[in-house]
Amino acid sequence: MSSQDIPEENLPAEQDHAHGAVGIADEENPFADPGLPPHEHRIQDIDERAARRSERMVALLFTVSMLATIGFIVAYLAIPTDKSIFVFPIGHISAMNFALGLTLGVALFCIGAGAVHWARTLMSDVEVADDRHPIEAPADVRAKVHADFRQGAKESALGRRKLIRNTMFGALAFVPLSGVMLLGGLGPAPGTKLRHTMWAKGMRLVNMNTNQPLRPEDVAVGSLTFAKPDGLEEHDEDFQNEIAKAALMIVRIQPGNIKDKRELAWSHEGIVAYSKICTHVGCPISLYEQQTHHVLCPCHQSTFDLSDGARVIFGPAGHALPQLRIGVDSEGYLQALGDFEEPVGPAFWERG
Image 1 (cartoon, rainbow, N blue to C red):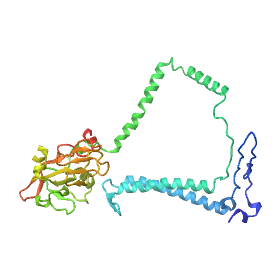
Image 2 (image 1 turned 90 degrees about the vertical axis):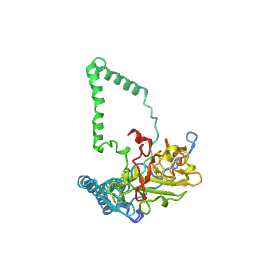
Image 3 (image 1 turned 90 degrees about the horizontal axis):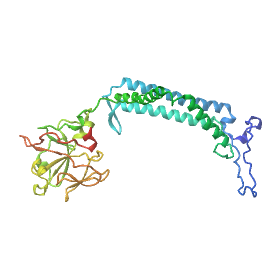
């Protein structure tokens, strides 16, 4: 239904500003005012039933937002922090995080959608043209503002009442400490957890793809194999936290091509194990060049030389990749001979 189909007596009264009016160019105003296009009435302006439908829709969106907020509070209080759920195609994620993100997203979206629908269907959509005017205040107004400020400063007696002034500044300085204390609600301090991984003496290296323990003969010269600690499974609640620190790159290099003495001593028959976590911002490294023994981080192109202690030869990474000392157990499987001797990942963790 358009405004042309409605009897004129049912149309809302026009406001004083004239739509479609144009100005005429003259010497003082060389550019003609094109005016505003003729105003088209919306169905809500014409039909009260349509306006009530829009009103109910806005109220529904706001009500859904309230219910979602209540759901957010219930999820925060009722869902255990260690509970995980499977969401396709993301995989296993925290049930609480999923519920909090979903309910908060719905609450915020419905508020925004309700406000937009309210503005577009029920609020006035008549365009108003207003002439520009100088922004600067007149001289007498500025003089009055300055005089009032000086009078207020004098009456406050901050210069003479030093006790009040100093205690006020102290109160203002102390108030933000309340917010600092609230940071304690973010969870327990990490302590030294970031300095240690699951790797320990005697723990076998397990192939990430086959989930089988690795033997030296399983690692060919020039190949790149990814490994994890024995016993760490993808369905474990703390899998993501642990694999983020314990993920390994296994590479076999001819012993004669290994330049670093400690790297050679910590290897087994040319098999070296390095952290897969880039020391720049913690991205997983996955690109290996056989001829040069270089590995490349795909995020910011930090490049490490695995034949020379995994030192940085290009890019923003701050230090070499940590190496894991390895050997073989009595059954011939590759095993760790201890944990990493330095924290894995970005240099930030060294200050943690």
